[in-house]
Image 1: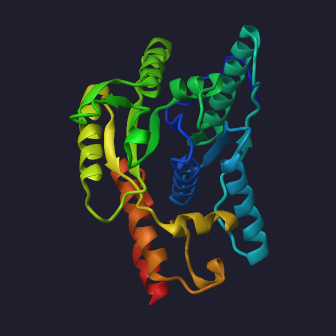
Image 2: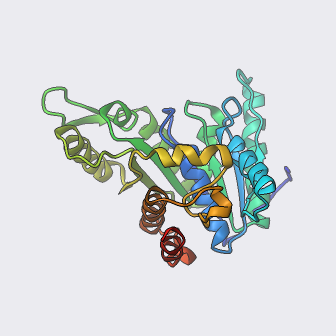
Length: 289
């Protein structure tokens, strides 16, 4: 998949889903974005850089297996799981970054969109992937524990006092991107696992994100609520943007399916990735009626 001197197609987009903290919903977001764009008629390739957990890869494998078992024609992106070295030498690290860059450029020449899911920890491939992004999506759980990857806060006032490690890495990636091709990275932070009940913590985390968004130049979007249904999709590789009829689900769709679908469509619209999916929510409502 690696070629020499590959040049990214001007119309191709690279979407990286990244956060150095695990459990933030990266693979769920990456899968939904990939499937949504595929269903909208775009050609999509996906890359999993988390070679230990392989959650994204397992999600795609589950989808392929369920499509065969249920006899359904599910949209499945062209997927690749990229290798990694745990303790590379400087030469091996440089070679790995070059291989990733060549692979992305090659795929971008064949597909309209490349979606990359990164591991929930620091790695040289993850850092390099961030510098290749046109759009960077960072899911973030609604807590000060997760906010800490972006910025530090005062324990007394809860005001932001500084920029943290992951945010600094993104700034470095933006600098690398500017030097390489004068490109820019549209950074979107998704506030995930939101509670439907207002609380002081929820308000303070929101205030912190607003302050950091101004300081770090990212778009702050409310993401997904804490819904069991998103975890239930995983074993079958399904997403909230699929045609959630009885044949696909092997059970009648419920209000939970409809609510999750509407929430995901709203999120994709906020990110500007909804394009051809706006009418799908109506069909889902009819299916569940």
